[in-house]
Image 1: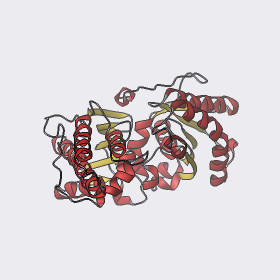
Image 2: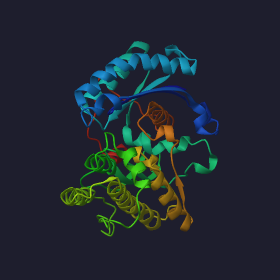
Image 3: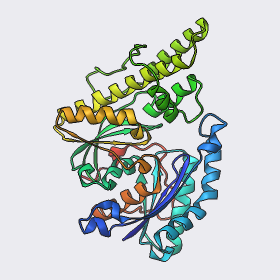
Length: 356
């Protein structure tokens, strides 16, 4: 079965084809990736310091058909070869989601194939299964740490379609805190990657920033207070004239260390309390080198394993949507009932998908 995946939840337009033959034959799942095409809107939104929803929606409209043709060509397939269409139904920007939903449903009606709405976060948390190294693929049940610009959550993943929310951010997502802190330090949007690079040049221990909710006793997160602490340091440095490159690098280092220590502590705590041996880290922040090094070492010290998606699947992409949709069709036989309906869900609890 060949599934087309369509991702338009925010500022990336991604399309990909996935063949379930590899999965069904017990072969490495990544062998089912036939071809993909992706366009990022980062350059367009950079001048505004963040994603402009209306511009994002309009750009998705322009990109979908060219990217579909590109993905088909890369796969050496045609539209006639498709067996199903999966698209991001939510959560995300309403206008952006509508573009993907309309395109997916129109195509499904035209070729008379089933369509399935996929939860964006389900795509992320299943993407490490596509790692091309056997040792890096997790086994159910596992703990998933989803960290991106819009989400920071800890999930217990019991099987495909069976998820339990353990904790989430009560204010800013980790990726959002990265971007806002980067802006405070004078870095361009999106500043997460630039902030991490700047942090590598900084000296540890110069600033003692808070570790919000690290010992709260639950699995929730909070990063708005940390961002405020950075703001206070920036204003203080601007007042006394010490706002130089070394200051920014040292403060960036302290910020990154604070975030990864909180994320690591909560993730390891979840592994221990729920008696799991596998931790999955997914989402854009999952590509952060410092976070990967910290989590890998913490898990290794406790005899556990950490799994990451391939770097090119950390950001939003069509491959993860095609893959998640394909697994739901195979294991749950779930398709969207209202073919042609605009049934997007900008806010959507992942655990509401549970079929058990």
